[in-house]
Length: 213
Image (cartoon, rainbow, N blue to C red; front, side, top):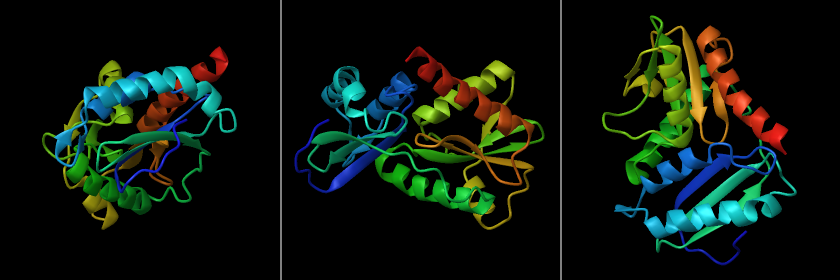
């Protein structure tokens, strides 16, 4: 993968790998093209560069961490680099801790346009996506939106969902984190049937990628 000195990082994407492949490649690249760096859209050239390096060098670059994390770093000048590191599971699946991660991602979204992690909840049989009005979905979030559509489950936006869940005020039965790095993560003690089904759907994509290798 590319190795040279970057300036101050303005955008860092962390995408989960499986068997040295990127199962959500097209979704992640589409979301990358919709992000901003210094209030300017990510260039088509940068997206093409990322796609080329994923296709040409990822298999070799991920040899030591075949189920690791691909990191795409873009600095303030628009220069980019890729590297692969090990995957480290979340240390806490408590609803409030997942909500804290989503709040941190929302702050990133204010600068880049897309939150790499978002909190979701089940309310009255429907999904609530903790996203601001007009906020675009990350690669992993587009997968959950498509899975919900396939299952016939309605999705609405809940802009204050993560904030309320962090404060212990969210009136929901089931909570999950949707993350480009960690996938679909049901909260401990507040998972439920639907979050589990969505997590299984994501897990099947990783399993298929490993089976093809």
